[in-house]
Image (cartoon, rainbow, N blue to C red; front, side, top):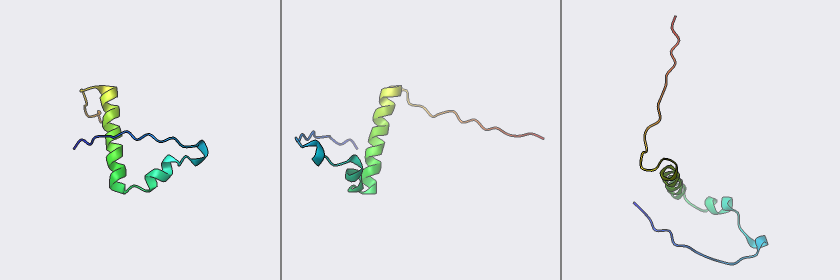
Length: 64
């Protein structure tokens, strides 16, 4: 599900600026996770391109 991001521009004074934390506190947990997933996908696309793969997993076993 891809959602379109609509830009919103408002001029405000620096002293009237709300914090990002306050904004995210008003969102539901589902909306926060959706936004986090979008950021993760965007970052991985930028960092790894179309070659997304699983990371290697190593297990260290102590032998007697």
